[in-house]
Image (cartoon, rainbow, N blue to C red; front, side, top):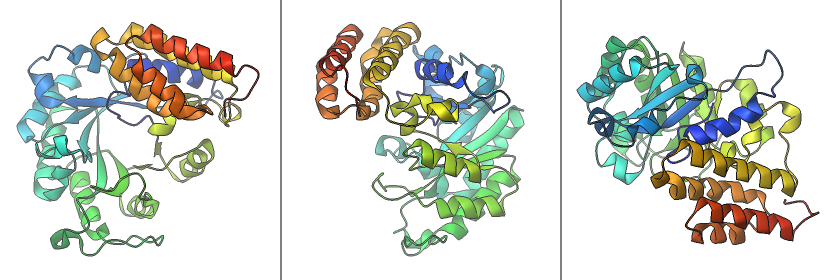
Length: 331
């Protein structure tokens, strides 16, 4: 599954991934796509850019809309609107730890109140028959002794907070959630802190609904290993290497510079087609923040791209760089 990532999980990236996914082995499951976070207030007020957030193509039957909000009534009203659209499901963001989000009471702040979180799921269940899911973290900071006790060790056993996490998830399950995705880090923990996949494994054993894991899927080998254990949601790797959604023989890295150039230019073309001009630069810069890791001189290329003011200029940077190392591997 493609993770819900701000400024990344839009139609242009889905179109790019689908081009690789269509080459998969017949009979193998096609990927699911989660949308960017959709602001509930903006959706309900008819914000000027909401039609792009709601664009479910190229495969709406495999798209899950993710809602970001804090109020029971407003989340339910937004879910009722989305229920009318052709989509696979509706997801509630209960895991975002960005300060701008948590200060509104949304994201991981919803994990502080089990009763409220349960009421939210119950309210959404009443207004939609779509698959209903929630994306979580382990919870707020483990230093909050009232709920979580001491910080968990690195050992491969569920540590601090698992009892609370399990109670929280069982409440969501009892209120009608069909699916949970767990990003196994506490709020405030950065990507340098290893994701605790032992929590994912333990939660799968305790719940009767599917549990997907998300975090530290750094290369195709890790992705395939985790996928053998259960559903996997992929974030940054999907941007750096969108071809990982293709058949196994197309996944390994590295890729030659011609392939990388063509993929980057295709993305820029898709971005111009499927996103409004106001979004072009921010979405392109966010994409190349991760995609440029494929290049030997990643920071050099990133800096040059960030100085450009048009998609065409960014494309020229890619072309000139790839021409300068013609005949070499980009990794």
